[in-house]
Length: 172
Image (tube, rainbow, N blue to C red; front, side, top):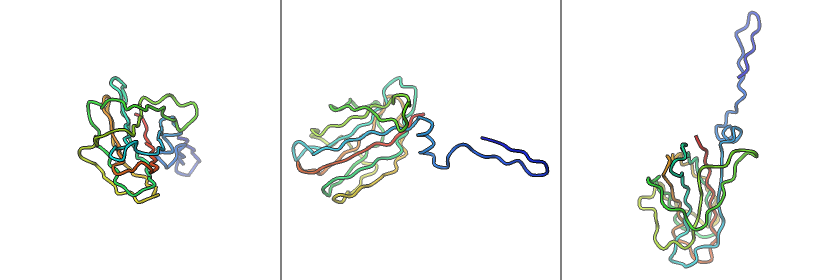
């Protein structure tokens, strides 16, 4: 914040922050993203799952702002509500990408797996019907406390579809 005072005029206060909260978190080195694109699943009856985990003892909350999702075929896509304790890490763990160069490493651990035989999402919140080649950004606003996780699942794929998914989160 910068304040200027001129004789006879009310003080003028200028903010050095942006009006876009997501952009401001990225500028403050708090924003992260991670995702995958996979030819899925390995067997037609399997599910493609992405999981974001906030480990025990992290000392921070992970705020899931939203997610980008698309598929080359029409299918249902489920998000799970955050669960505690966190579910186990998936087979393909990847590194979170900071939205600003020089930001500290993320405490959240993202992962994915295209060999899951049972949908881990019991009560979808929300569940979305994707059209073929449709790109959606879904605002979520979910909070992962330490030792919790959240799943996102492509539910109706065939072995020739191309599924894409990207988490968008920040840490507090």
